Length: 366
Image 1: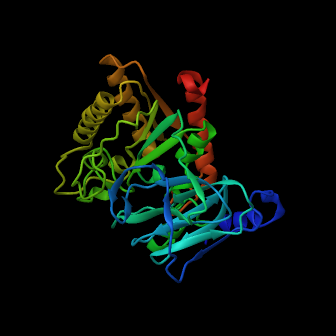
Image 2 (image 1 turned 45 degrees about the vertical axis):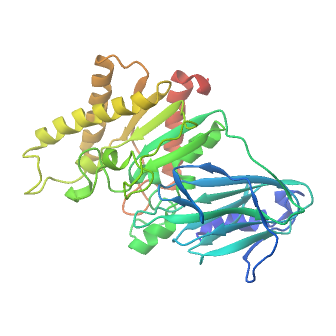
C-alpha cells in the first residue's frame, strides 16, 4: 500500500470517520456464502458486461452501490489491480494485486451505506474484472443514480496519473505500477470538485500520431473508439453525454527526436500531421458529443513545442467554426513523479488551472 493511502486508512479507522463507519474491515471470504443476491451496480467507465462481471481496461473505472445493512460483499476477478474501497465517501482500505476473490465489507453501523470501488492502476497489458456487489437476503440494495454532470478526460500518462504517488523520479516498472493512482490524478480531482461523474480514457506513452520515442503502437485516437484495447467492440453508451471533454495530448509526439524509419522526414512534417490529425480527432469527438465544451491543455515541456502545437490546433478548430473550445497552457510544474511525470502536487495545480477556465467558460463551472 502506498504511504498516502496507508495514512488515509489509519485516519478512517479512527473516530474521525464518524459514527456511520465504526470500524470497517475488508477481507477475502474463504468459504462460499450461500444465499447472496446481487446489489445494483452503477458503473463508471467503459466496460464489457459478461456473466462473470464487468471487464474493464481504461484507467479510472469506478463502481458504486448503496444498501441498508451492516455488511456487504464485492467480487474482484482475474487481473492485477489496485482497488480503493470507499465507504460513505471515505477510503477505508486499498487492495493491491489481490487474488481473485469475494471480499466482505464488515463492521458497519446499522443504516444506509454507500460502497465505491475505484481502480487506481493502469492496465495496458490486459483487462481486469470487477464481479459486482452482493449481500445477504436481509440487506436491501439501492442503485445510485448517475450524476447530472459528466466530464471526460482524454490523454496520455499525465492524464493517467503515471507514478504520481512516487516520492522519487527514479522508478522501476514495478514502482511505476504501484505508485500510479488515477483516482488522485487531476481529472478525478477536478470532477469531484464539481460533483461530476467522469471517464478517464488515456494510455501512457501514446500521442496523437506518434507514441513515445517512436514506439510502434496505436496512437491514442486509434485506440479511443473501443471498449477494450483489443479493439473488438466499439464503445457506445447513450447515457454518457459529457458536458466537458478535457484533452491533453502531444507530449509523446514531440518529447523525443525522430528516428530513421519513421514516416515523417522532418519535424515540420510531424507538426503538420499532428495538427491535422488532432483537428480531425476533436471534430470526430464533436460528432458524438454535440453539447460538450472542449478544453485542450498542454504543459511547457519539449521547449514549448507541445503547447505551441496544441494552441495551433485550437486556432484551426476555431477558424473552422468551432466555438466551444479553449486552450490552456500549464507551465511551471515540478515533475517529481516517476520518470519526471507530474506529482500529486502537480495534479492539484493542473486541476486548479483547468478550473479557472471551466469557471469562466463552462456553464456548470459558474
